[in-house]
Structure formats: C-alpha cells, structure tokens
Length: 331
Image (tube, rainbow, N blue to C red; front, top):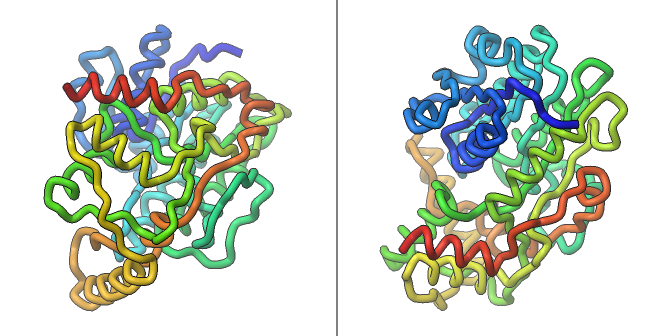
C-alpha cells in the first residue's frame, strides 16, 4: 500500500534521516522532520522542520499530529559512559513517540533499530531474527536500543502497526558518522585493525537502507506479516572487515591501513579508558571501549530471508557500485 502521508522522520538531520526525507519528498509526500538542531537544507527541499527533543511530549505531539506514518530514526549512539543520556533518548524518547502515536491516531511506526541489540560479543554468522536478546549487554547503546525495540514491537496492535529494522553499518555519500571517523583516525595515524583473524561483516549502502524503510511502511498494516516484528537489513554481501575499511579509505583518497592490534589489547585499552572516563566524569567518548573492541573483532553477517519474504527487500545497490558512487561524491 502506497504511503500517502504526511510522514514524520525523527532525526531528519542525520545521515539516514536526511536520505529518507529526500526520498519521501521526491515521491511527492508531505514530510516533517523532528531534530534537535536546525537544518535549513531540509526546508529548502520542502520539508517542514521542527526543532526539539524526542522526549518532550509537547514537541512530539505537535510533530506527529495528522501523520499517517512515523519513521523513528533518531537515537543516541556511541560509546559515552553516561547511561542516562542513552536512556533519555533511546528509551524515554521512543516511549514518548509511541504515546504520541496513540494519542494522535498514527497508524504506522517504522523504528530504526540495530543488530547490536542481539550481539553478545562473539561472532554473528548467518543468524536470523530468531536470535534472542542477550541477558547482558556490552554498552549503554545496545542495551537501551534493545529495550526501545522491545517496546516498539510490543506496541503493535489493531490501531498502531509497528516494525523494527536493524540495518548494519550504513554508509555512502553524505555519511556523517562512519566514514568521517575512519578518515579522521586514518589521517591522524590512529586507525588500527582489531583482531588477528579477519572476520566477515555485512554493511548497508544508504539507498538500500532507505528502500527497506519505505518497503516496511508500505507493507505495514494490522495483521501484516511484518507487524510487530524486527528485521535485519544489509547489502547481503558479507565482506572481510579489513577489506571494507580499506575500500572506504580508498574511496576517500587515503592509503590502506595494515597495522593491527589484538582483541585482548583493544579490550584492555577499552577497560582502562572506560575507568578513566568514569572516574573523571569526562564528557565525550573514549576512542576505545570493551564493547567497541568486540564489535571490531567479530563477524556480523545476517540471513535476510525474512526481510525478502515479508518486506520484498532486495538490495538495489551493490557494494562495488556504492563505493563507486561514494568515490565520485568525494572527488
């Protein structure tokens, strides 16, 4: 069923949110963006922009009123030591979105989750959505995203249909997170490969991530196969992490990185930095944490059977083509 709108995109100023706003507008759909910052570019495109926090009930209520679908993309990401920051945005903010959808009769909610909600520190190789949530999480980000995902899926009923998507490592032109960090660390000589044995990972080109969100919204309705369910989203092209990192650096015009450290050393460094940040009450994020070390040294690739079956998801842009487009955008 086609999206008629209006549609709200939370986090519309971010990488994925911005791309989603652009695609919805290109389809002639009325779009609103809710973000903490001001994004004149979105207004220039034709979107209505609202500035505020997603845990502010008044702001969220005004944003969702009259909407057919909400794409809840906004999240607190990273490795900060301050748990409350993650709780406020990822859990409290998501609950505020759910409450507002109920109060204003929004019929569809597409939630942007993450595969990290099921990561226990080891390899994830060809796993599907039957994998349970772990009993212990390695960081505040996966723990709070898992709780938010639980709430979103539990909320799905005859009046509000919900679905959660778990795109892995979204990248491409306009990236404001993954590529800038890689480039900055590479230029500073601080980028290292983690782990002695290369592991395969799935990644998601930005256009494919947007496709998945739109397909989910179109398929979503009470009783739909996707209602109340979570789905892994990726390019379905597992690639060795070392190779992907170096191909991204190549697209940015930088030489490959070959220096590596063991997972044990990375986890030790992470533990020391976590302790130091916690004791000092430092702002910002440690360059390494134990959770990040586990992420960087383990396999992450997924069985996308459910997404293909229930959402009709087929990655339209390959890794090779995406890298070509990325290099062209950075030239």
